[in-house]
Every structure is written in C-alpha cells, then in structure tokens.
Length: 497
Image (tube, rainbow, N blue to C red; front, side, top):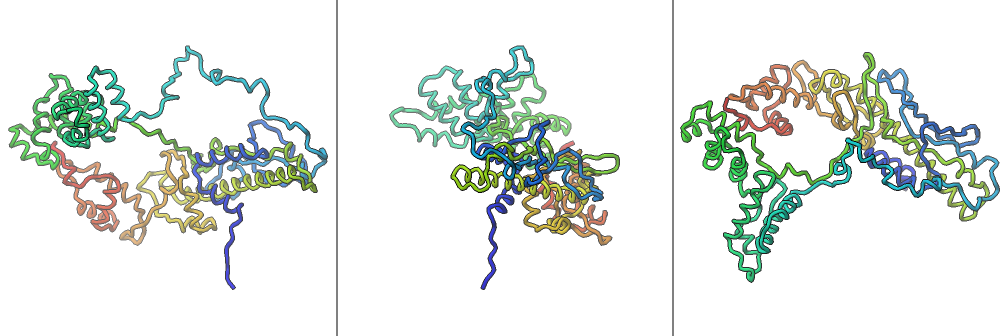
C-alpha cells in the first residue's frame, strides 16, 4: 500500500496561472480567448442575463472597491475583475439544433478597416513614428550606419566591418590588430598599418571613445573630441595617458608629486575625467524595454492603507451565453461534445483566474499589514518577514506564497516593488528585538552618503556605528550588505576634495 498525490488538469492550470506575471497572464488569456469560442471579454456597460437560477454561478463582481487592511471585512469580491456571465442555456429552453450560421463577433463593414485609420493625422504634433515602430539599435548597427556615410576603398571597408564586429557591447575592441590581420585572406595583402589607419577612422565615430583598446585610450579619445579651449584639457590627457593606474588606486599624493600640481588643480582635472564615459557602448541600448505592470495598487485613505487589484491589468471574462445555449444535455454528437468540453474548459479557466486573484489579494493585504512602517517611513522601517509568516496568516503552503510573490508587483506611493522585495531576514538587536536586512542596508546606504569623502567609513567603522544604534552586525556581514548595494570599499570611495 502506498500514498500517491494526483494533480488534476484543473489544479495544474490554477497553479500555472498563479505563477505567471501580469504580462504573461494577459498573453495566456488572449490565447484562451482565441482558442475557446465559449470565452469572451466583458466590456464596460455590458448587461448580461443572470436570471436563470439553474446557471452554474462562477460570477465575480469587479466594482473597483478596495480592501481595507484593518481586516474588518475579509471579502475579496470588490477586488477581483474576472466575471463569468450566465451560461444557463445548458439547462434552459433553447433550440433543439445548432443553427447553420452562428453569430459573428465582427460587423461586415469592420473587416476592411485599414490600419491607417488608427493613425493620427499628419498635423498631430505628438505623433512620433520612430518611437512606435523602431526596435532597439545595437552598437554594431549604429557604427555600420555611420560607416556607410564614409567613402572608403573595398579593402578598407572590409577592414572596417571586421573591426566593428570585434567591438563588444561596452564599446571596446576585443581582438588585437595582429589577430584581426591574421584573419584576412593572405591574397588580399592587408598590412597591419592599414588596419590601424582604419581603426583611427572608426574611433572618430559616435559614441565618443568607441573602438578603444584600453580604458586609457577610451578616455583620451573622448578628451580629444572636446573643444581645444576646455580648461585643463592637456593635463587631463596626460593624466589618463600616463597615470591612469594611480588615478584608479586614488593615490593622490603620488599624482600631486609626479604631475607637479596643487591639490585644487588636480581636483578640477579629476572632475573633467570623471565627466567622461568609461563604457561608451552603453549609450546605445540594443534590448527592448521591459515594462512592469503592477498587479496590486496600494494607496492611503485618511489613516488607512487600502489594497486593491489593478483593474486595468485584470481582464473581465465570461462564458458567452448564446454559444453556451447551443449545448444540449443528452446529445452525444461530436459537435455537441466539443462544445460541452469547451464550455467546461471556459468555466475552469475563469475559476482558476478567480482563485489566482483571490490568493494574490490575500497575500498582498497581509504584506501591507505587516509592512505599514515601510509605507509610512521608508526602507529603514522595513520589518523582518519570511514566507512562513504570510503562509501561516493566510492558511496556505509556503510554496504557494513563493509562486504568488514571484514576478508580481505592487504599486505604492514610494514606487513599484516586486512582492518579494518585502521579504527579508532578521538581525537581533541589543534590546532583544529584530531588525530586517533591508533596513540595515538602508542605514548603511545613508551612512555612506553622509561620510567624509576624504576619510570614508570602513566596514568595521560602519559595524561600530550600527552597534551604537543597537544593531549587532559583524564586519563581514556589513561587507556583504555593502556589496549588494553596489557600494565600493572605503579605499575606492576616497575622494580628493
């Protein structure tokens, strides 16, 4: 004898919908609408006949009211925007046979509407064609476009294309000129000095500093494109060409001595160098922007924080009552069986959406209730929170909480955050309480922002300042939190004032 857990297709579908992001869910809903004729969107103002008492009621109202985190009302019907209309035709008095022609969703005159009718008129000043049609441009395509504007011989153009192909996304030439030269057909008789001459031409392209072989050359290329009368230009060229290592290690005493400069002069030169871009290729964005659609909206009404589902991101669905009415009870024909299966799938899909939205609402409400301090005061007031805390509060398994908080976003007055952002481990305090790791990171960031840049705070010093506030954190833990914030060590944060 043994135990075995069997997951029905309906349960598998509910779990899969639960872990989808809003954008993925919208795509899933559209695919369901395209494949199942029983499903349709409910538009605003639609009036459905729900009077049939025999209808399988899976209706959820979407009236836009919010959920109060005071927990006086545990209902979620006001927050969920999925709706199944009446499909009572399965039990009602409908026609005995399916008509030869079913109603269509589109009027005949709408079929030949051209896409141009949706475009704004030519005198619309806000219309920008490129922002709506162009894809992200790669650095290589940007350089090749400039290359096409430059007159060159066939050999030089071949060299230029090869050089451009060897430039990485940061804008640096990855291959050496010798390697590039060895890659050409010997019959072309291409010399190393020819490749270098073409490289110098490409280095005049935009963005400034592109096709450099080192950081020093990248910065020097950018400086040479500045106006000749730029203050401290020659000194900055000397700095990046001869003393880039000393600048990187912030050995200002050595720089002052070797360049024979005063401290204030060196500071102005360094400011000029810091205005340059060490990764010029990053200015050209090749990837498409990733959009975030919040699943939950949190707002404050008087002294209460209210939680509601994003109605714009949750399409309202129903079973098409007319098509459902064509399903006959005792008919086992192929057409009737197909429609009956489609009807059942539509019902399960709507109920799975209902379950997803209810679960999301419960979890989001508990998170807001737990993290009111963050909403009122910011990161430093974030409380420790783990999946088990929410799972216990809503009566669900931790794996379910993990699914519902992944790729789900909450819009708050402080910004848009993934639900997982509100979960963090804890550190004990001297008074016996707990402080979240998110709050500690916020305090570290605040301490570093206020430090003396001539004498930046070491990890040990930061640990001491935290201990003075009652937060017991080891130096190595401070280093881990500092690195997660992208803050450099104290030796690299030192500045010449």
